Image 1: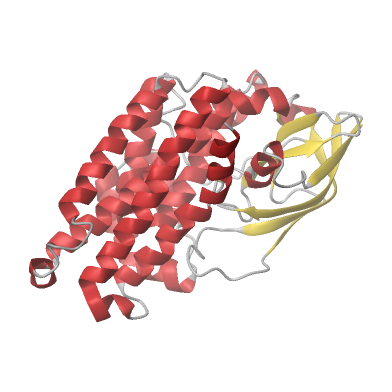
Image 2: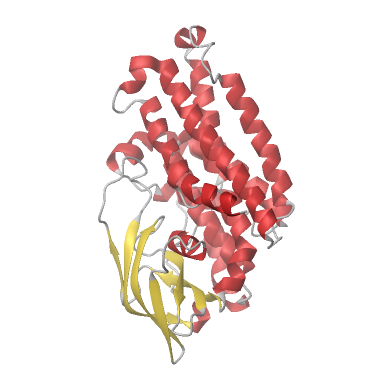
Length: 362
């Protein structure tokens, strides 16, 4: 049986992304952060607005920067929702690159339009390809598809009715990438940890026990050849989270007029943050032009810039907290939330640790 769509008609008509942020995300940011509310309705609205389809219908040189810009607008308000946006965008990116035209026809428009929500599921495989972890899922060929067993940690933007991508290894060492239904037989979602931030991102450990994956749901029969084709976009799309968070912090710093006057000599000012965001936005456009390059040199260029995004997000969040002073040290304050969100940019695959290791390898 193939993955079944869990399509739910959007509850609202098309809106601009700014309007969705103001009317649907801003009012629930605290609930997302503190109560772990998953922003399903705003995500579906964002899909209707076109936020997940920029890079599915355009050449990467145009589509990727547009997707990053949309994600940055969302992350200015809430990086949890920005992260869910990245998960959705990554799944679109995989489907758009797949040579399985039947799968594309069945799923791409639904995922790009936000009618079918889903996650990326490639944290463990990306680490595996860098020899940081072993591949978590093992599969075997059966009639019509594969049976898969294993434990896949930390898959986000999923829940009942959702789908996600996964990579499993066969006995002959070949790796297969496929779409998996969160409700499929043999698939179980489990929550096992509480995070300091991003609790509202639908993050689960996924347990597979002889789960059947249909051949019709295969994204790539040879993931080792496919991943180099999508890894630059996988990383570039993440820039929207860090750049949006940094810009949001800088805007908040400017608005706090009383504290801003005495904070103008801090190591990182709002103007400096804005300048660095602008420079990295320009870098996104440059890097997107070579997103199809499967060479290691091109990938390392993306990783260098991704490291700069993580460092900017964490530095900007700290600057916002320093300007706020004791007010930023209060549980529930915006500077406190931003610091916790920013740290995630340092540990999200590829993490700072992962990136610096790859850069050291050359």
